[in-house]
Length: 157
View 1 (cartoon, rainbow, N blue to C red):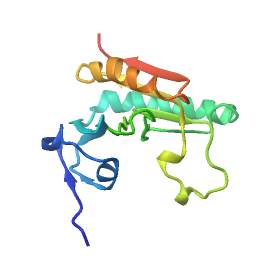
View 2: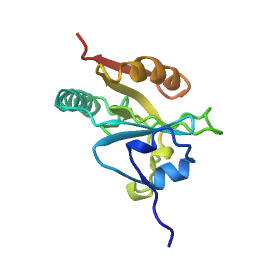
View 3: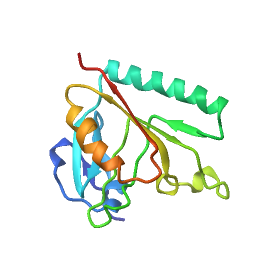
View 4: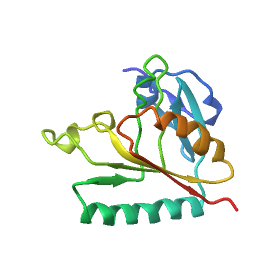
């Protein structure tokens, strides 16, 4: 049995394959993303950020119940595979993600986030995430053809 890789904030900038990133254990208290083949780590968001994420999820979930032909599922946790980034895998993890289509021929335990394409992604911007959310993610999400909307909730004054 091979040892499982443990990633923490000290590993920020480390080059990883997609498989290494997905299989690794992670030190709690941090948010991790694989961007252009390198690990990015940032402290977990505080209460205001988390509150707004849940509020947005409740709104989007209510809409999904009323209009399932538009949105079928919304989640606080999700990954977006940027298809153009095959040599240097890029997997941002937005604050909010919504899907219209799921492979209907498989059970949930057979699904993987790579099997579904997001329709909508959202980010709650705070002072320490502004560059990531307003610049980097905008550029990355534009490369994903299925994404029709990118929601940004800016909490800065």
